Image (cartoon, rainbow, N blue to C red; front, side, top):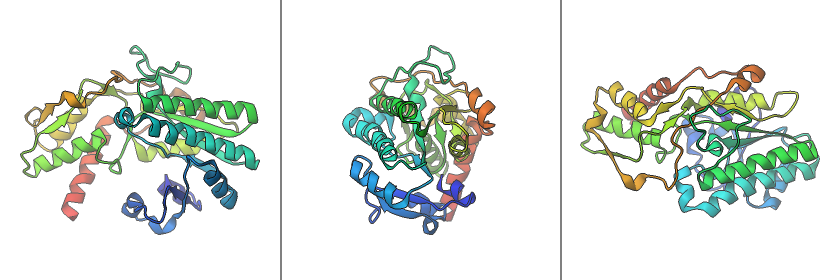
Length: 306
């Protein structure tokens, strides 16, 4: 997002709980660390949020913060709810209090929908969250909708389906698969341990999804949008593409670990992103296979440059 906004000529202020000690490693990796101002903000603390918004009075706010792992949310449900739902509420209330024409983007999630019985979710599909993370994201979504209707705030939620890039932390399954496969291709004898590989997800390319976030805040009227490719694939398919790209048979290197199964999971995530295509003139260019190939290419490049 920072890289995209810089290309649009924005002055960018980024936040972290403690900006003095945060490494901002992804900004460094993208070569834009010196172009982004940073400020310490605790989104769980209303006073902290209000102070920074009052100090800088931004035109747009992109709320991408919060605990972002579905699996981890089962172990840290309170932290997940506070860092997602309470944080969003603090932002909304601070914007309302300042009475400034601030446009707010909120990162909602496809996880809010839960299982949709094999039907593609659209913006009218009821929420059936199946994890503490999804419950928190659902609460934040409705807070945004409520403040938009009650107070006239320009606030939007993007219901993004899985969006991947090499900047993903290694605990996320796509990056875990890519990194392990590249190590095996380089001679490692390790076995990649995965949970359920029969689940289906709609995987897109994160760098192009940020354009959709930005487009939401450029509209005349605020609204919520599903952002997705419209194509779902099994995790097994993602694994197969990654390993075959490296000349490997994934079945020789992957084992199932039932300890990685979640207490509840979404078996099949499907999306209908037509509203974004029609109103934002946005459509995903890259699908799962493209995403897997680009992530492998980036990891191989990193290995060569070490």
